Image (tube, rainbow, N blue to C red):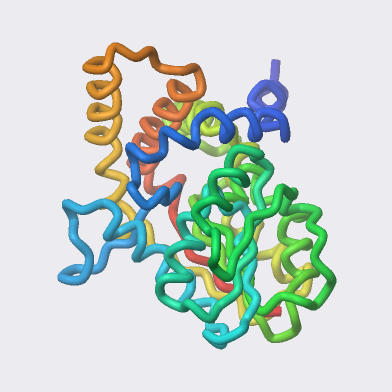
Length: 293
């Protein structure tokens, strides 16, 4: 059997269907409190003397700040969309910093919609149960859109990028913060490929986009002034928190004599292999992408 055929079979086996993603987040979201008290479901951005290495949320919130800085929207009455918002951690942060913004989040998870909207009550925000590849927003109606570690669930697909382009007003921006591969899957070494497969299975990811291919797709769609920043070293300190967070979570469960749910096991597995994948720096990287319509 050829290498290409094997890869195709592996892709089919790990494919993150909409049902997989919904189940993962419906059942595992509550466990994210072990990672972030602010329910930030992403990695962080470290700035020496500004963020605290020992306080994870300091770095996680700084990642959200970096995204909002690059959106560059008027901070009063602008409508911003969080494409794959989770339980609304980034939305909460954005409204604390810019209370006159209006933010709409979209997620496939009923649990996240319910819990997120409880936390956003009486604020200029709402979370909708929608697919970020096919939203209900009118074309050319949004002042800014961002996706923090969410487009990976669709493999950074052209469909997701096209939908973001459709809903944005001219001269506004899409900002993506996420991990990407630097080469095609078939060119990954054995160790890198093993980490990649287990990362995708653990977190119900369709896959990570090739950073060069994603830039090409953004250009083809019509985005202009595309800026790609490799921030892997900024992200690394928060990734190093993974083994300590996993250990603390398991010990907490043991002390309470609670069993680990299947989705919690998958989540922990994905986190562990995200750390291992980060060691393959020639194959994986974490990027901030800013693309203007």
